[in-house]
Image 1 (tube, rainbow, N blue to C red):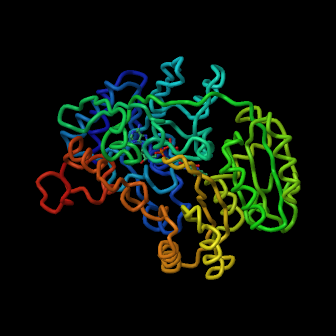
Image 2: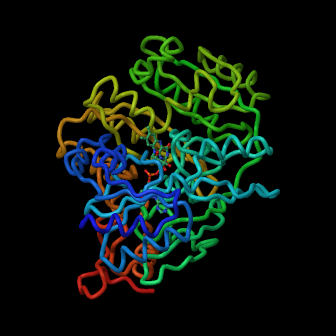
Image 3: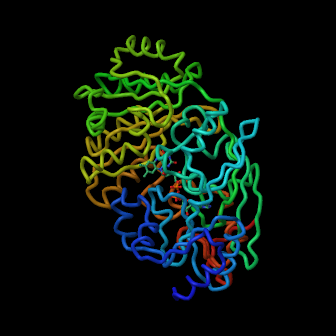
Length: 459
Ligand SMILES: Cc1cc2nc3c(=O)[nH]c(=O)nc-3n(C[C@H](O)[C@H](O)[C@H](O)COP(=O)(O)OP(=O)(O)OC[C@H]3O[C@@H](n4cnc5c(N)ncnc54)[C@H](O)[C@@H]3O)c2cc1C
């Protein structure tokens, strides 16, 4: 990109907004956690933007997009850069649009809907909501760093999903506003079903600038760790707790040994060779949970009050995709998959995987409430990586035996498992970014205007 563009972009912004061209800073702000995947590491190492633009208002975003469209400059939006599929890594240079400075919580309404700018950190929103008797319905284990805009753009669920479903379920995202990449960028409001045109589109079809997010009534939580002699016993107990609506829970995570041995700071709660279950459970039910665990031959190795995100230990720091991080810290050969099991045949499916791959796959289970209200077993299993062929063979085998895989080793919206089969994200891209300048290369079924090669999707 011509260096004169940086000067021109700076002239469009107010005195407190910034345009950064220092190569080290631009490189740092072009990266996310794509290196979780050995496959993506090879593909994305060295991909950087040309300049970082840090706007502070919607009007500034509109000015930047207007300029970039006129000059055919790609724009890749960045929240906090904690995504783990290279979602925020610019493939074709251009502007990295860093929205971290747009971090105002406008209001938390009396009906429990928070109205926010995109750069609000999820942890800040959780803390502010709890002061008013509300809390996030679901959040990624990166809650402290991750932004709400990035969660909508690239995330799916996490802690709380066992009770409230994922981000896309139960009308959790009530509405959002996006700025379009048109010659004259517009602010368009999406609400109800129309939010799905933008959710999990990786910033390819609009810049989310305002969000209406439904919260849940706050609960007084406790944490608890239960150890079992076998993974089967741990899974049976966790499944019972997760699927029984009588238990008020935010987290039910099951680990096969030796995964707990990777969690150095909480290693003392992990007896050698045992499978563990981590819980966030309503404090008023803690004693009952402990009794139920003992009845099921489980040993409670830790329990204590949860007093927010600064609680030590914070069990959620070892769950969802943080589990993978602890494994990689122990042995760089570990990587992961993201799976959904059949609630009825899950044991058989796990057995088939174990029989074929032995310790090449280690089970880390998370439970997810589905849109139909059922709680289903999901997993972010650890995979001991040998090579790409072997990984793909494992993914194919999962699919053959009916295990859903949201493949975390691909760098496009369609391949990741959250692309809508009704193509609403692609259709929105055609409307809002006909030149294909937003995060180019990440929505592979899109062809820019004038091309005849696009997917034959109409509505
Ligand atoms: C250790 C670890 C644990 C994780 N655990 C979870 C988990 O439990 N659940 C989960 O869902 N994810 C998880 N993730 C992935 C990631 O942390 C979350 O999805 C997080 O919410 C992303 O937020 P972010 O601000 O970092 O987004 P970024 O990484 O900055 O962006 C993510 C995507 O959204 C786009 N985007 C960002 N802001 C906007 C905007 N305003 N408008 C349009 N598009 C935008 C970006 O272009 C990019 O494509 C984990 C990642 C790591 C490394």
